[in-house]
Structure formats: structure tokens, C-alpha cells
Image 1 (cartoon, rainbow, N blue to C red):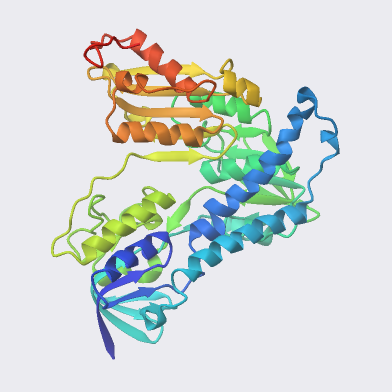
Image 2 (cartoon, rainbow, N blue to C red):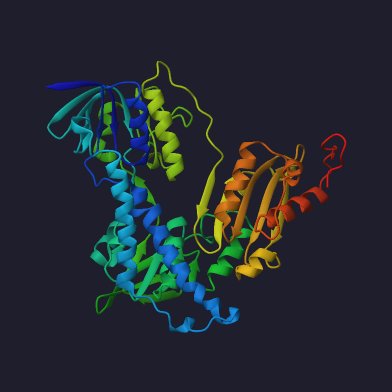
Length: 467
């Protein structure tokens, strides 16, 4: 027997939960379907447990400055691997429980704990139930990519789905893939005493495309762990249960390998072709990024599964957009927020707004400042990095930025909000900058850009000159 609903949401991750919340405001005839492990990717295996591990790593790494600061005994500190992992897992469980306690626990029959698949357009099978839905929202997330030949090495191959289940830190580890998560965990584990080697097919790390920030990031983080770039990785047995990992002329023998080469969309198991959904070369359907509608079908796609902006705040926004449109008479096109990507390495790698590769160089003014002599950073013992801002030459409006900076997460937010407000370099420079702060680094870049521009500096307010 078919159950008729207005909307079926497939996937109870961040995007699905936000979508369901929007749908629920407008109709009681809806279901949320998920047969996987609940608690969201962010809470279970992503943002939160990784940041917990990074925090412990930063705390122990800080001891390197103690002698310089006159603090004795820092060399007596050590890492207890099992206790560190227990701490990380404990925090992870708190975050997961918080999600579950406010979402699926009390939903009753509206939540279907089963895997869904299309039987035909608008008809879903979920366990023993058959759901006829006027609209469907797909928010099934992603899964780590591991080449089939590497899977034969069993539990010695780790992904972000299982690294936080370890009970003991490995003695040695190769990280293959130095995007956001591979770089974050690689540096953190290195600081916790694991012998880490980082490998990536690209010549850059952290997905940086700015030609000044990229090499500097490699230089700074490469001082903490070996980085092998520009060559594909190979894995083979090394004997004694260990693995030999090679890239180009380099090779290392390790206990474990963390594979962080990307994620694939969880779509194949849905039998999307039975709903008339065609997948492109990336394994995802064509959709409108402003409405999230797939072609002209009554189906919407939200969150990591579309492989575009795989970030929690973007998944939340997309869930809201899909949820609103799934109960609207006609889809509404929403303006998407200014992109913001943060890698919680040390220094943070931050990219805001337009990426360097997207700029029209002939019409863009770029300003930069190194952080070596920035007072606040020098006091913190973290005066490493660079700030780069991009502005439109004609109007002076801020277009984007790339940062390699301590606490760059906060500077990135500040710049992101400036772009959202369409502020110009001159308007930003009129803002107060407290001393001593890291934000003064932004002020230095702004002054550099003003000095090299021909923007007309009109008085502001009318009776006062701009400083």
C-alpha cells in the first residue's frame, strides 16, 4: 500500500534536516528517510571531531615556545595517544547526541530508518514502506573515495569515516590527498607524535590557487612534515604488516595510510534513472544552483551530494532553499552567499569570495602583506603567513581574498562580510582597527592598495577629510 506525502526528504544529514524543518513548517504530509548512521557527517566524522583533534595538537605544539617565553618544563610534556583519542571521541559523541536529541529521536513514523530507492518517478521504496511523494529532496551526502586496489590492504587504509574510531595513534602514517581534511589531520597527527608523510598529485596544498599564498603554505607546513607533491601515490606491501607508499622517487614504510583524495556522491543506490534523473560525468545530476531543482523535475538536491560547496553552512543554506522550494507553487531562485573556505591548519588557509583563478587580472588590483613584523602575531609567536586582497580596479569594491594566517578563520569572516556588503577598499579603511590585533594586517593591505590606486577619495563625513 502506498503512502502519499507532499514531500519526501532522503538523507538526515545537515542538508536533509534543514530541508525537513522548512517543509514541516508548511505541511504535515512529509517524511524523512535515512538508513545510514545518524548524527550528520559534520558531527560524526567531519568538522567537529577533526577540530577536537586539531585543538589537542595545537596545545601540545605550543610547548615549543615555552623556553623562549621563560616557561620551564615544557620538554616534559608528552602525548598519551589512547587518552587523546578517547577525548576526541567523547566530544564527538556529545555533538552527535546533541543532533539526535533535537531531530529524529521523537519524529515517530515521519522518520523512516531505511535506505530509499526510486521505483518510478515520485515513488520510493524505503524498507517495507512505499512512499508516493509529490516532491523529493535528495540530501544523501557523500562517501570517501578509495581506489579498489587499495581496499585490499584492509584496516591499514583509513578514511575520515574510520580514523576517529582508532584506539591508538599509529607510529607512522602516509596521508594521500592534501586538500582541506588531509592537510588538517596530517599536521595535527604530526604534532601528536605520529611520523606523517603528506602526498598529493597537485603541486599545491589546501586547494590554494593564489601563486603567492600557495608556495608559502608549502614552505611553512613543509617544515613540520615531508610534503611530496606533483606525483601520484602508489601503495604496496612492505612486510611485517606495514605498507610501502611511494610517489615519484620518494618512498616510505608506514603503519597506516589515510586516504583523503575526495568524496563521491551517494546517488547510485537510489536508482536515480528510474526517476528520470540523468547523472553527468561527475556522477551528479544537472541542477540549478539557485533553486536546487534537478532539470525540470519535481526533485531537488541539497548538501554535499551535489559536490559543489561541501561545507556545513552551505549544506544548511541549501537545505533551506530545497525545503522552501519543495512546498512552493513555483521554485524561487535564491542568491547564494559569498563563498568562504577555511582549512584549520596552522597557519589557517582561508579563501574568501572570488578565487585567484577567477579574477580578470587586467581589471583587478591585488594587495598583500607578510605577517613577519605584525605586532600581535609576533607577540603570539605565530608571525608566519600572508594576507592577499583582490579588488575591482574601477570601483574599488572588494572581490576576494586569500589568507595564510593565525586565526585566519576570524579574518576570513570579517572579509566575507565586507564582500557581502559590497564594501570598497576605501570604505573598509574608514573602519576602526584596534591595536594590537591581527586585523591590523588587513589595514596594512588596504593602505597599500589605496596607495597604488587612482580611486577618488571623497571626504567623509562631508566636513572631514579621510585619514
